[in-house]
Length: 335
Image 1 (cartoon, one colour):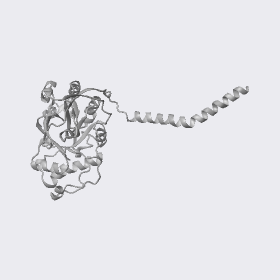
Image 2 (cartoon, helix red, strand yellow):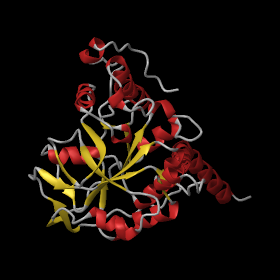
Image 3 (cartoon, one colour):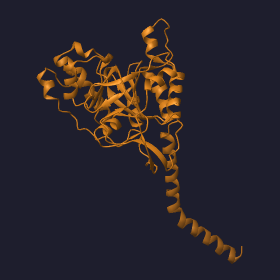
Image 4 (tube, helix red, strand yellow):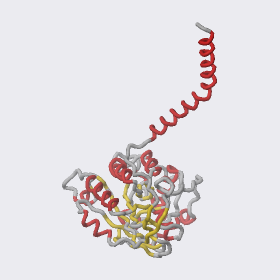
């Protein structure tokens, strides 16, 4: 082999040796990052980020606004044709998908209670045609059926979880609650056992209202601020307990679409029943809140649930009212 060839081979070897210490880790880091992204990617279709364009928003300053809060229970095909109540509480997956398609096609923007509170407290504006999607009881089909459809549309929602039912075969698991909370489903409280709160008092009432909050906050690691009265039953004593427990909103089953900050512990909702036609749902939504046209740049990419929620410090301090009523701690753990 000639001297020139030997020199060329030596130079190539030196170049490879000099490059490999830096390039190999960089390449490996890129591979690991790609693998991590793939491992955590959810198989749901996502909408592309919006471009700068004229948009409509509900301007700040209105003390009462029309925001339908839709109330769902099961998203399933009712398994027992003789179960009339089960049928009335069951929206089929195909009907639910059609309803979400209609909301998206007609300019509705699902928000959560952080958004609605922020508006009514003068801290934020709302998108045009705001709507809140709530799901009572935390049934398993919320995760297996509704959640993928919501993710496909990029929709927020609210799940009212019965803390004592978490992990049952018919209900969501703790892991599913954590995943949904991190991906646009705001978690609310629906008591420990779905009890009729108007029939309880003292420590029993506080167990249902407060221990359920403690359990879900311990699981999620952030405050849970929204409550739903089981079966819509409440009275003055129940409302006072909900307020004292630290909730910022509570919803009923009473019909209505207009909400204010003053009535935030008795917010009304729109029931979506089994077999209901799309035309009936559209009629129940009513006229949307008037919006104003503005030109805005595209919003930065944010988690679906909005700004990070402040962390909590455990153990929580019980309200004095709970202690005075005979409530005792360490009763709120998830099963």
